[in-house]
Length: 110
Length: 114
Image 1 (cartoon, each protein chain N blue to C red):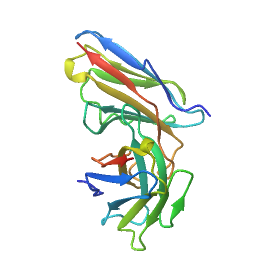
Image 2 (cartoon, rainbow over the protein chains, first blue to last red):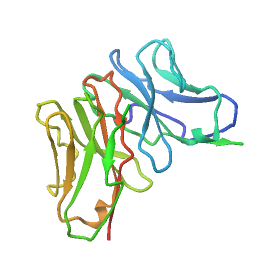
Image 3 (cartoon, one colour):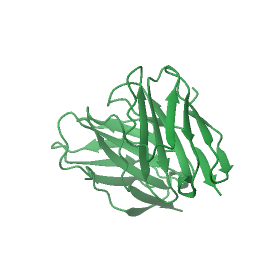
């Protein structure tokens, strides 16, 4: 019973912005959108999260549509080190544990 | 600051032996989670601790698995009578309380049962 839908894979060019889409059409009002990534042989790394407003930090920007049914993670200048599996997760007040789906495998190419 | 620390980073054990995996969470984090990730697969939730509340053990796959946490610090995950299907990376995460507080993961313990 997945709460999010992501493309299985995408490529992007080094130095360009990478835009990773996520659909969460059944999101409810108090649920946050979280993004994590997992680089090979490492634990998942927290990237960013948001509720309604767009968010930006040193790693990425999160753009959430006004109806909150979808979001986009933006890596402004992708590097080879950004190659990883990216997970979009919806989490609410009853979801103290994160439920990871299959994610998007992002390959950054030189 | 220091992140979540897990030890050992790698463990090879013989089938039937018991193993203990350790997790040191980020200081001040009241919530602690254990997950399992088999090769090429997604993360499976195992157990959750929050402060002095009873832990949520709903993800433990069998009674061979158990975990303890001392106050709001170290946690150990114990697997008794290990089986080959227990081979996986065991990941620990910690966070402040609340669903708006992100989990921070360690790099896991890679367990191989021969």
